[in-house]
Amino acid sequence: MLKEDDEDFEEEDEEENRAANRGKISAVLSVISSVVSGFLRNWICLKASEMLNVPSQSFPAAGSQQRVAPTGQSRNKVALKPGHSLLDWIRLTKSGRDLTGLRGQLIEVTEEELKKHSTRNDCWTCIRGMVYNVSAYMDFHPGGEEELMRAAGIDSTDLFDQVHRWVNYESMLKECLVGRMAVKPNPALQAQTEKTESTHMNGLPVSSRLRQEPLPTPLPAKDHRPRYDWFQTDGTVNIVIHTKRKIPSAGCAVVDLQDDILQVEMLLGKMSYLLYWRLSSEVQGRVDVQTAHSVGKVQVCLHKSVKDKWTKVGQPLEHHDTFIQCKDRELFYRECVLVSKTDITHDTQVLRLQLPSGSHMQVPVGRHVYLKTSLQGTDVVKPYTPVDQKLIPPSQCSAEMGSDLHLMIKICPDGLLTSHLANLPIGSSLSVGGPEGSFTMRVLRDVTHLYMLAAGTGFTPMARLIRLALQDLTSIRKTKLMFFNRQERDILWCSQLDELCSKEERFEVEYVLSEPTDSWKGRRGQIDACMLQNFLERPEDSKCLVCVCGPTGFTELAVQLVRQLDFSEEEIHIFQG
Image (cartoon, rainbow, N blue to C red):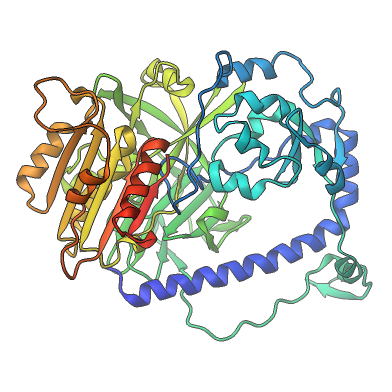
């Protein structure tokens, strides 16, 4: 049974605050370093255009279709004009047309210059230090001109992250790149870096401009940070991670072994703990992972290629042994193989993807992964929430989540990625990134009544949530799903939901069809207040949670109606669409 007590939540809050403070200190030190090297780096970038390619970024899904996020951050989609699809935009970028207005010249952009370009036909914006002329993209933007104009003439990184950070802007806007934002030196920091006193590091004199100021001594506090140790046998190397908290039964470990590089990430609520080595010696290309959920311990076993004695696990690489918020961790992709396709409805399939032998992925409930592929030279990325092979599989099947991923995907005839997936032959490779997402077990704390409002493929994040509620959370007395679809043939896993409903007295499901046949005996129509008032019960001494997922219009209306029934913001969670 999965439970988290008050101390677990307090520890997570304290750790998040400490991680945020460490991040602020790191940011100041980064500015000091950039002042020293900024001019030289920018000069090189202006002289060599290839250096101005947008740096590789992560694709965390701060507003993706499967992420729990605060209400009010949904992305408004508009109907695009004919000839303005993503594929049409790709064709335009390949046409040779000058989309920057600078005839291929790359410039350094000051804040004052950026502000001058803030009109519909002359719109520049900055994302992560790089400036783009997005004027030509106005009619191609799925969110519409109004949303894009909010970014006109400003640094729009925060706006971008709030709504659609998972979008692969680097590839889509590479032909719109104007240049890099000019670095504004801070006089106080610059003076500090120009001190010339020397000290010694590893016995060698080092100028003070190259060393960081000592960090302030933190106040004594209980150590909630995960730690690791390791041991070996003649044939194995075993790394043991102590998370210092209970972890979900679905697991939280993501392991990737590629050649001699080992990366182990623990997804702990909103926090991420990373171990990252270049291994001391050669190992076989597989890993074994064992999890003790109740004590929060994970053991990763590597198999030596040669039975020799190791003196250490390996050489630590960048970000090794770090504990930061998940949203600040760079996304990692691995190549998976498509091993099967199973039809669920007339237009929906479950794709089974096999991870590389050196990878092991336990995707926490409510998290999603990314599929990425290159179409006509442009990377196309989309998030999907994994499901189990069945709605309530046998307990032994949960181990499959470590080596296989099951993704429920609706094939849209005009969808660039889904059309590609529909025609993808078995045995093909797909890049899978993640897991990612902000859903944590915290939102289920003390919940007694769990309600789910799902439309179409908005059911996918609910599937594993239903299983979690019924199998692991005995404190939840009732789990109810209201499932909206157009026609009866569109209902995903209908027979499995009906079977579960007949066997499990704590679970109820109601189907609502907007285009039913005359023989349909269930609910009809669209979501409305009367429908929800009867569905969302509030028994005495209960704590309720309402989860919503579906197309943007459905989600916005559903949340509005739930609020009108006096549910608070803390009682509503949105898997954004």
